Length: 243
Ligand SMILES: C[S@@+](CC[C@H](N)C(=O)[O-])C[C@H]1O[C@@H](n2cnc3c(N)ncnc32)[C@H](O)[C@@H]1O
Image (cartoon, rainbow, N blue to C red):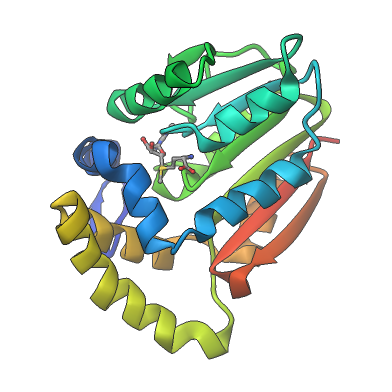
C-alpha cells in the first residue's frame, strides 16, 4: 500500500480523499467568510489577477476544477457570455451547493458537476481554458490530475493553477507565525474548526514550490509554463499552455 501526506501526517493513499472531504464538509458554510478574514481580502485580488491573465472572452469553453463556492466560475461566466460555457465542478457536494446557491442568487445558471480532478468525465480537447484555484494541494495524485487537465484542454489551450506556494525568505518567520498560531484560532472562532485550518497551514508546507510545480506541469504535457509570484510567493499562479 502506498502512503501520502495529509498535512504533516502520513496516511494511506486510499484515506486522503476521505480526510480532505471531511475538511470541506466541515467548513463549507463558513468557507467564504473565512477566506476574506484569513487572507485579509487578498484572495479577491489573487483571483482578479487570475481572471485578467485568463484572457477568457465571449464564446470560450471553460472548466473550473475544485471550484468550490465558485468565485472564479462566476467571473469566468461573465466573460464567456451567453455563447460560452463555464462548467462548475468539485469533488465535494457541500462546497458545490454553496457555490450553486450563490450563482442562482445572482441569476446565473451554469452546469455543475461533482467530479474528481483525477478522472475527469469530459472528452479530450473540450475546453479553451481549465482552472484550479487552491485545489491541487488537496489532491492525492497531483500528476494524474494535471495529466487529466492537459487531456481535456484543446491544443493551444491554457491551464491556470492558482495555489499557495513558497514565500520569499524575509517573509518566512512572520508567515509561519501567522499560519500556525493565528490561522487555527481564526478557524475555531469563525468556522468552529481549528483542525481544518491547521491542515491548511500544514498542506501548504507540503505542497511543491514554484519550480517543482512548473516541472510537474511540463511532465504532464504543458509545453510552456510561466510562473507569476503574488504577494511575495504566498501564492503563485502557474500558467501552462498545451502545445
Ligand atoms: C480551498 S477550496 C478552493 C475552492 C475555490 N476554488 C476557491 O478558490 O475558493 C479546495 C477545493 O478543492 C476540492 N477538491 C479537493 N480534492 C479534489 C479532487 N480530487 N477533485 C476535485 N476537487 C477537489 C475541495 O472539495 C474544495 O472544494
